[in-house]
Length: 280
Image 1 (tube, rainbow, N blue to C red):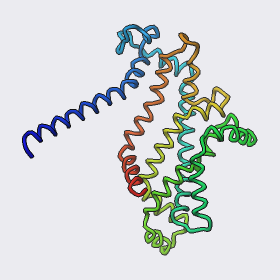
Image 2 (spheres, rainbow, N blue to C red):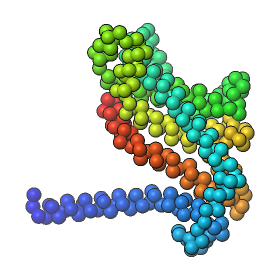
Image 3 (cartoon, rainbow, N blue to C red):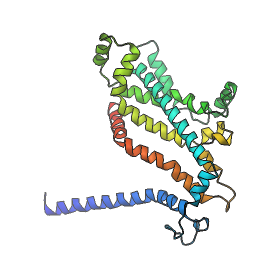
């Protein structure tokens, strides 16, 4: 490689890095502004020119949302709903994926195609029938409509089916010969192998459930059951009267746990996504 080629490659690499840094700054700017606004006095939220770091920073916004607005209750409601729905979804989706991947039964292919077909139906189409069904069950104003229907998620079953297809049949047969029951094979052999896939799917489900706004808006009526997205809605009012500082504070409270969770599990998340893509 000649000197001019090296210089050309160096310039290309530098240009790509500068572009990526610029995009990263652009992407992270809303979060920085959200964090900054949560500490500002209310009168500086829309100050001209904009103030990024206020000289009068305070925790008044956070005191209000925790001491008066009931943000802690909304936080625990969100935590309970996201954790419970994710746990149920992971269990049933992995069990369903295992069935489709490793068992031959009449109509398996047709049933799997039907399952995939349900992914094409827009959520808005099933909104009214789902509400009527939940009302018949007496589940309105409870967390059950946000947990139970999503436990057998079509995307989750498809994802786990693709992942479990790569598990060796000989390994499962060896466990059966050693006396493992069918559920024992699933619990003792399959689940440990597919742990990266479960982590990836779990993060996807957890993120979706944590940020779910439409579902709680439809099914939850009592303010004591409100989740963080619904609680944030209560801070919005007519133009000029919305409590933007408190809204940004609650947004920070909502985002930070997800960031911590992702940073802890990012390695397994990437392993699961990569392995799933290769096997898919």
